[in-house]
Length: 252
Image 1 (cartoon, rainbow, N blue to C red):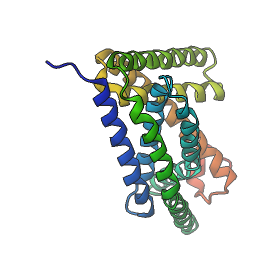
Image 2 (cartoon, one colour; image 1 turned 60 degrees about the vertical axis):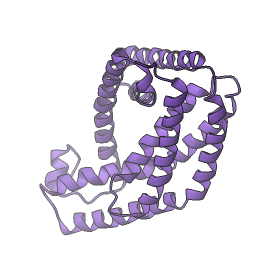
Image 3 (tube, one colour; image 1 turned 90 degrees about the horizontal axis):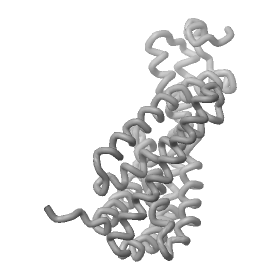
Image 4 (cartoon, rainbow, N blue to C red; image 1 turned 45 degrees about the vertical axis):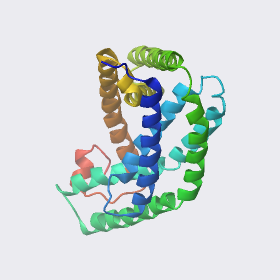
């Protein structure tokens, strides 16, 4: 069997991610594309994971600034994604108990989220410029010797796994610490996405490690979503029916 080429694998992954991001951003303007924002954010994180692998190569330093710009764009979508997840949770709760005020609030919130996603979609030009700059820097880096690329992938993954394991140990020491929970969730995502973008160069051991990290991410993500739901209901004075407030342990 012919050995897998790190150059070909990483170049193909880069182009697929760039194309996916470019194609997904306009879908935010389509109210029927309910998972477009989630899909876009995953692709952005995967691209940032690939940049973390490549930026340590010779001449890869410019990727650090580009990665920061990419992270800044991702952060602009944080609030809209949190509100989108909250609305999905509230829609499920409404199936158990609803009211005219609660239904009207949800319609207003859905409109606001749609407007926010439309604003993101209108940043297509800015994002295209950033993606073109990333591609311009990355493609020459992917002409590095295959052995160097393979070693860089392994080193990046070892570094990410070390940070993930450290965060996990610290979380176990302070499981009720919001900071520890956030740090572990962040490191779990980083490891998972790095394995995702490099998986064709890796064996089963790394895939199993990514699955464990995914499990931590999902468990802590569900806890975070629930905490955000409770806090935001109080903060935004969501007109939740009394029976639902009681069920969630919220004051009447």
